[in-house]
Image (tube, rainbow, N blue to C red; front, side, top):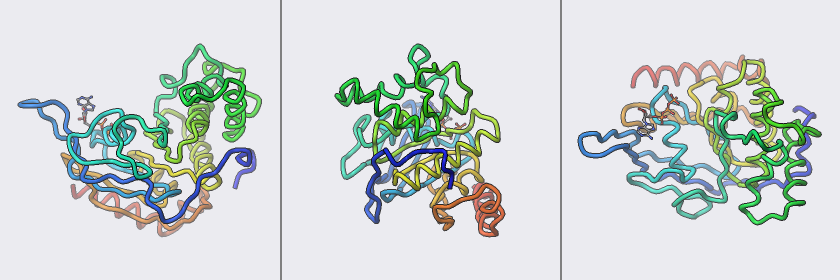
Length: 271
Ligand SMILES: Nc1ncnc2c1ncn2[C@@H]1O[C@H](COP(=O)(O)OP(=O)(O)OP(=O)(O)O)[C@@H](O)[C@H]1O
């Protein structure tokens, strides 16, 4: 486990067998009448507190649509989503989101510290406490002492770390991630994957990540949920069983990794 991050100063979340996120018979269509475009149908999912679940599926299958429903940004056509036992009817304080496009999600006129502190204003946190929390969370993602820099002074990987710090600072027990590493180069991607594994293991935050990258889903998660077809539904669920400690070389060379990868590829080919 890496020691460049300092997660000890951030509060952790209780984990266990309790279900924290429930998706019940989720159905979502865009448009209406002749232009009705059904995207998701009858999707069910239960995520336990502290679990790391990835949703994989081909491009255009509806992964972002699913995440937008979960984050309360759009209202599903039918079905229910609840977090911590409460029905989602709009953005919920128990859910934070990290998007793929950090260049659009960070505000260029604010320093990284101000970017991370910003959502806490809506929670009524006093300014000094907001800035202090921002510094602690920047430290947790390996950006100690970088709070005065502007996002545009940083590399893509560093900017995505800022976006992760901002989501962590919000202190929501559930973190949704939409293809968070798709816009960075391969080595930065591996570094960010390992950062997220460390944060998950040390903080107990529940993570739901969508990706079209099967290897990434297997490497990161406790469970991989495969969605396919049009409209999309769950076609397979795989428990990875790799535990909290991962290694970019050893885990991917584990025979269970290639067996699971073949199974997912087969499911996607068959649908
Ligand atoms: N706001 C919208 N209005 C109408 N149709 C939409 C809207 N957003 C997405 N779609 C359509 O819904 C379908 C699923 O899109 P979505 O972005 O959810 O898929 P995805 O699996 O995340 O794709 P990708 O992997 O390429 O990001 C696509 O056909 C897309 O054109």
